Length: 151
Image (tube, rainbow, N blue to C red; front, side):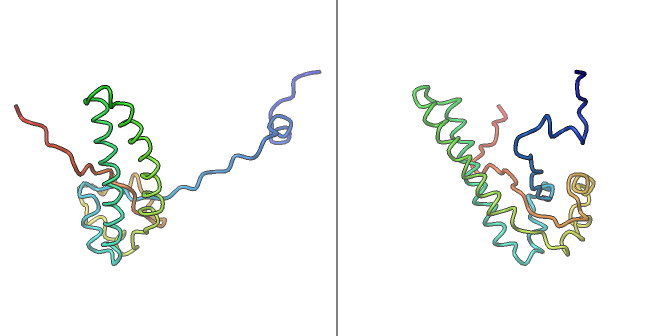
């Protein structure tokens, strides 16, 4: 018997599992260098969005501190701090999905992105579909970063 070619008509003979569904994709705004500051000033919900972003940034900062302690700290504490960091990564996802990415950037703000971010608009429009509803995304700010010494 010759091999059966894989076609739309014969695929059910080869693939018998559950269908693979397309993921839900959220059209998030490319994070400008000001971390959305200019956009949030024009957003009537800007204070609440900033609080959600800050909550995310605090968890992210804790993860970065734990990872730094794991890599650069006492070897006997490396696994516990790594465990803390990994545990907090779940919190990060929750804060991003249910705290930040539920907030739509108002269309009136999207219309002004070119004037708000003239030097970054090309990147914004390349990585954000400005013809669809746009939502805020996490900005991954480290709040406890120590500036590098210049010595």
